Length: 466
Image (cartoon, rainbow, N blue to C red; front, side, top):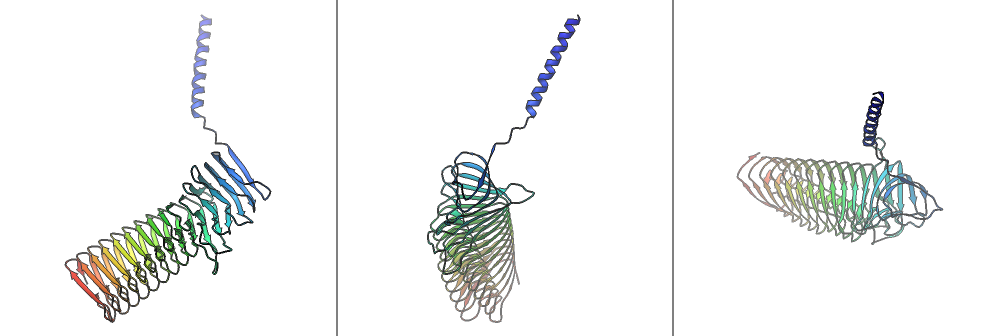
């Protein structure tokens, strides 16, 4: 009998141990993937990452390159790469090149050779940038300091071909540091000369970007194209001499979509704050976030730049403030044969034209705009000689349709509140709804024509108009 009891006890104990081992097995956490630590130096060979895995890179070098050809997670831990020959220190190659950079401490990448980005993302490659720790944000400072002129340039972070860049967190700076007569043709973040199809996403972090002479701060370089999507983070972008702050470079095109974040953009001398650069084109959609945009001389705050530039702008939400440069509209077209289509359906929008430009509408010198407002809270002030909403000056034209929303417009000197600006500019105004308040200038009507030979056709069939 005792022997049977003993066997039963042993059996119960075995079952309990088995159950405990199963529970233990179920509770075991998988081991972290093995990390390869690489320390840069002036004596080492180039670092080729062609096996997927986790890597930690530390140290300083003036000779080594990092080249990524696979899917890899790479932690940059206080890295400095400023190569003696000025070449690109860090490259993510196309095909299977998919790098996730995790930032720890301050990391600095510098290039100076013609056409050499500081961090290159080749055709078909992708780059994601994020903090290693949310408690202590990391930094990535990338600089291009050209020593010679270059028309075959690449973005500071980007390249001459199409790739994908996604910034999720961290403090990122991508700056072209040049001064005339030295110039380059690329964006701060995005493409270089003739780089088409660059895709740039910013969903978090603090991002500062400065474009080269022909490039946008964020977007496309000379004669290239790019797609920019911003859904979060704090973004500050400045265009080069011929580029938009965010959008297209010279003779280039871009699509810009903003749904969140705190965004500040300033155009170069001939570019819009957000939109197109010199002789460029852009499509801009804003549905959220806090957006502040300032055009360079001859450029709109949001819209088109100078000389045969065009922009299609849609605003449906967010808090948007835009100011045009001299001869540019706050929101709309720049100057010299530039065009814009502006549609506002929502949001809180404040726009001021530069001298000779409308608050919302056309800039100056044969520029045109089509403006449709169906909702939102809209406040617009024309620059001197420009309408609040309508046309700018010097043979510029606008077609304005208001169907809803709360609209307040004030004309600049010699401009109408809503209608035409001055010096032979024209406007067609149709008001079908909404709450509309319009104030003219000394020589301009509240709603109608501005001064010096300008004309307007006005039709009011609805709404509350004062």
